Amino acid sequence: MFSNLLPKLKENVSVILQNTLYVILALGFILLGWKSLALQGSINNLQGKYSNFQSNLVEELFNDHLLVQQSLGLNSQLENLEAQLKDLLALPANAETIQIREIYTLYADFNSKLSRNSQAGLDVTAYSGSVAGWGDQLLNKKFEELKTSISENTAGLEDSYQEYLASLPPPPTSAEGYSYQTVSTSRGSFGVYLIKMPLSEVRVVTAAASDGDCSDGCATKSLAQHVSDNGGFAGMNGSYFCPPDYESCNGKTNSSDYAFYKSSAGKWLNKDALSWSDTGLATFNGSSARFYKRSSDYGSGGVTAGISNYPTLLEGGNVVVNEDKLTSFQTAVKGPRGVIGVGESNVYLAIVTGATVTDAAYVSQALGMQNALNLDGGGSSAMYINGGYAVGPGRSLPNAVVLVR
Image 1 (cartoon, rainbow, N blue to C red):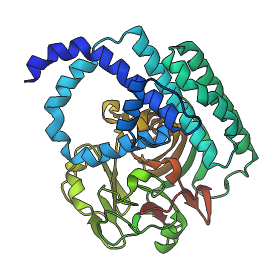
Image 2: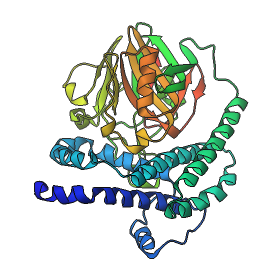
Image 3: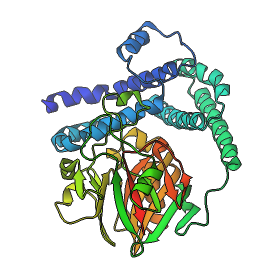
Image 4: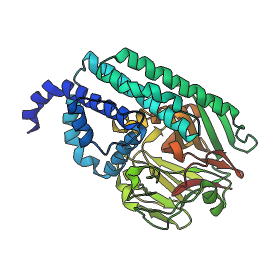
């Protein structure tokens, strides 16, 4: 059936992609709540059809991110369809479509920084006037004006945030194993909050607030509480979960679908997810560590700690991120990214700032990790050591990684 439809799909795909991007961007501007835009009747009809769009593009990207999480266990059934879609997406885009894609990327970066500044309590009302006019500029195809305006406003948000960071007290510098450093890579320079400890001197514990699998209203704790309850001295946020501050998480608040070993109970939570092939897995057994690019490669074996998430960042010192399997939330939004890794005889817990998931992989490689797994980030980012937060406290967490002496 696909072979009969493919020629016609190829003939029309550029138009379909272009129109789809128009709708996404135009609706994103409308639903920001800055100003009601008078659009043509066809766009109004689409607005009604997509009334469930979120008021913030970053949240919409997160919804896409959640859908991918929920489908990880079904990916093997989609391989044939993906091969057909790959042919379609490989078609050359026209100049207008390329412009729109560039605007989409710029807007995602702006909205990420807008959300970040708002969460930090910074005044963002000065940007309302500019944002209100972007929908008109898009519909009137004033692409260059629109790109310039988005870029200028993004730069203003970044300047405000850097001033805010400069006003904060420095993170603790006296804690053994802790440092803050700037790491240069081929993708740019990134700030990194880092805990690096010899595996022979610490024990890794994976801590969960729930006693078993949980799909909604799951128990959570602050990172400080996770560390304290497990007799630790340091810790970091764990795997992706569905936070209560996203409307799309209604009915699955604080749930996490990933396999996770609760060290204190000696058992796997969400054990069925160990069969997933798109998630990575980090396991520890006393002072030894083993990472798996695919959770399904684990099989079984004795562990004292274990956490799965996606994607695997490094394997044998090589970057192994497949961006085709990442969500827009992971590739287009730059923010804090959590990493757990090992290298030589050390365990690493890192939060990379202003990064995409792929950026975090290259930073991990530059830090000397040999194997590394992406963890949660964004508003859930938290790092705690010797009685204080280096990052966070962030959200209350269903699980965390804890270091015990």
